[in-house]
Image (tube, rainbow over all chains, first blue to last red; front, side, top):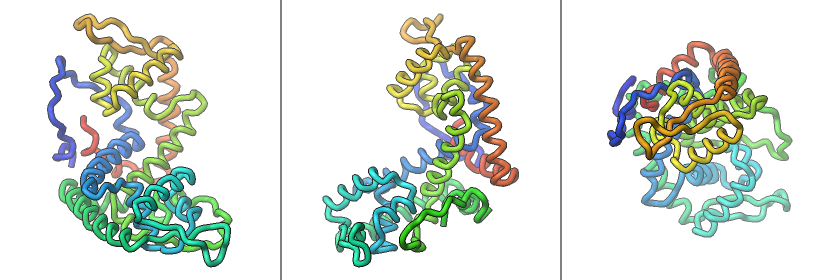
Length: 159
Length: 159
């Protein structure tokens, strides 16, 4: 995959097209992960722009959809999202009529999160668009490299 | 590496320890890349906290160090950092006496960036700390998995 299609970007009209050395950065996993993550997120954002859903909103809706009734604390913990940021995101999704907070049947101090009917419909569409994005990605990287990357990254994602 | 040391986090005292399903998220490369990147950055930030250098500052100093005289536009382009953000970062590094902007010998409209003597000294220390962070990471992931991951991610980093 050394210099596959993903590495190519349009030529900029720099006065001096210097070959700028990245030095030790190429040996740092963090640097490579960041560049890859930004690239993949940009493609994802583009893919889901028709329904105005961003990566973090997608994650939140997927997990509520698969675990209806979970609490904000559980969701924040599971996705490692800061509590304040999650509350803000849920406010936005609720205003769009996609998610709702019900009183928890077991604990009066928490809410039980769920998708509305509209939320379920939108999530279905979001999953289809995200699957298409993922398929495109697998095609670009090569199916084997894509699967291998997912496998290697597993250790970072608590299951 | 499926459930290696990296996946483990301290037990939280949740009232109900539910097994929250991530559903399709685990099949998305973007999600895994993001979780991994956040994890590695946190470790990197911790490792370089003694010299108060964050990941983006490190990247900027490394590239200036390896390419003295390059312009802000070239640096922003090479690292895919937004121009305004880079200017702000360079202001901060300059205030700390680590980098400087010289008039460009070839183009009056641009600056030639370089490290100060103090900047060179600090970069040397930063590289040593970053190398230790990287070695620890390779140890945790396994040397082979670490190398393989770097190789697979190459395509995302324009060289």
